Length: 257
Image 1 (spheres, helix red, strand yellow):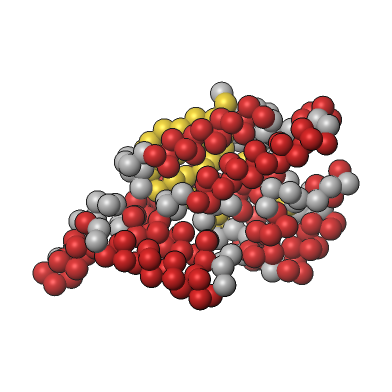
Image 2 (image 1 turned 30 degrees about the vertical axis):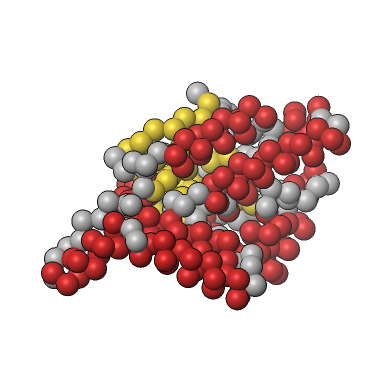
């Protein structure tokens, strides 16, 4: 089934369906990148959902065959390609929601960490960075994004021991943002995505970039970026509509532009 992109109303949905576990190889990385580029360019997609089409797995990480068959140079190229995929997702001016309903391990969790929000289903599955079990460390952003999400100590514990946690503990630690019963999980994901899509989604996307890029900058530079984004938004249709609606005491009709 591969990786597919479709639009559900104003929500772009990228679905991973590489059975049995969504483990990714070179082709899967190319397909995921292509899907993310497509949703980034789709002006009708005002929010993005990244989900799995498989019952038990969100993503199990890199296909071990790639590691087994690669020399040092080839493995380095594979890591570069993997980082490029996540840079597309993290750098697009649209809010991306990772919908986690199954195991998210190794690079699979790293993919979810690059999303802007993680909504999960209750269930008996695990999340963790398990690369240490192969004598490796996470190298798709896990050593940087995980401590920024759950804190330094917990991140080092998970990375150094390969410990995995279930969705209840993930919610407690802040690794996921919402946890819902499996029966309503998909509806809750789409409700949230539609909430973003129905609002001033252009402003939400620019705010996302201000946060994600600003965190990597000194404060003074990050504040310059924030002001630059605000100046761009001030000239937008949505800003004009928002101000007019406020003055006219009516509900704004945002278009995401």
